[in-house]
Length: 79
Image (cartoon, rainbow, N blue to C red; front, side, top):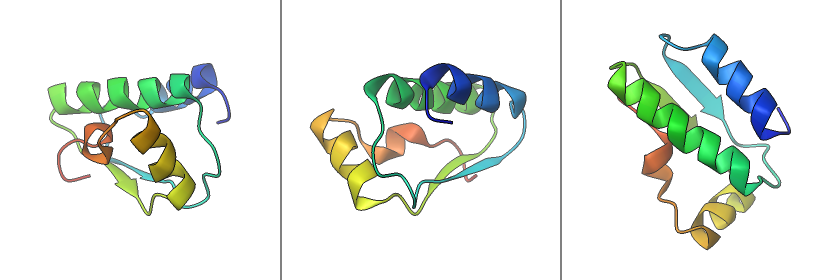
């Protein structure tokens, strides 16, 4: 999904299931999408379910760095 609303809907549809997010093809990500991912990781932790960020691209990691977000904040459990 390219916007935060679509990303949130897609993640909510997967709630309760272990999820692996392939971030290898991400060339840019908006702050609202990062916020959705942080909230999703919090939800998955509360649900004791795995959420894993796989192969984040350099662009994805650079954006997280600019926002002072640790990639670990986007993960929960063992995925």
